[in-house]
Length: 249
Length: 249
Image (tube, rainbow over all chains, first blue to last red; front, side, top):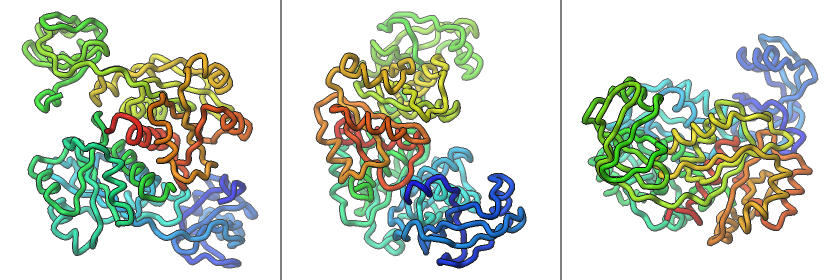
């Protein structure tokens, strides 16, 4: 997005976006633009919907109940959705929000909560996770909001992996792995669809670890000699993948 | 640290640590162990001081005013302090704490707040930053607490770089850089002392960016096509450095 649009508010919407079209925002976004950001008729906002790229739009109504916008100019062409899969054992509320935001920021395309033996959270507010992914996409200029999948168990994830994920390779952040070089391990997966799985704060159980490591599609990697919190490991692991075989080049 | 010690509380202390020695904790740590963690005589704690490795110790007094511990067994040999330098434009309070924690977790050895034109914070509570670095070291099993340097300005940092840092190379996370591959750029610095500099939320000013890029010791790298928040960029950039030329291998 050219620098002149970088400072405009950026909102995710459902409707189609095309030159000259009009978009009526729903109540919550209308209130946000009109009351919180105090936008008035003539002000500009960038909209995206995950299909049509990002568009500069202009307010034609500033009602707090229903802001409408005229679609003026495409400022970014649509990019294909990210194929990068990110699985994680959900954390408690605030840090869970944080993990969703960070995964979105780092370019994950599919975000999959996975319940493990030591996971301390069992029921998730799916709507809240989706809202977090949308908000992060708005802020970090992602053009396709990542899909947040409903939670599953580790057992089910592994037993349905081939059917659901095809030949996707799974990079497992494993504290017990004494790998020579995570860089070479990740580089060896170049050209394949990949995922990253981060365990819960308490780690995987010994049984879970053995089952995971026994899968042909799993590559255990070490994220260094220090103990990383799960949210740090998410960013670090996704950075490694994006830099070596992802979209950082 | 063997798994059996991993669950013990871990505290940073000033005194020397040697087999059979005794350590009297100061008031705040005594209160923490005795009142918060409810440790009693005979319970075990791991202590480290940045010089003598980590030691298993045992409470010989559980007074809330002054816990004393007997040094029982070394559980980790001292590692050399990390040479990795991390500079960042300070953020507002909560996210500032977070950045210090994450830099420590990722193995930075020197943490340098740098005031830039668009930095929104000018005076830092140095004690608070040090406390955060200590707490993060305790949690992530770092054996040497990183040094938190007093804040400086970008101008002063650059004008004294050679005198203070010798031949250290500075990796600059630069959104405007259209680099081919951050992996190759970082790999090219193998064997040299390096630092990572992350700008403020508003980015560097155009003038600052030009001055930075004009320095022979600066390597601008791109951290991908998305807008990363400063705290995310810290973890991502440090992960890249540690994985490619640092201690992840």
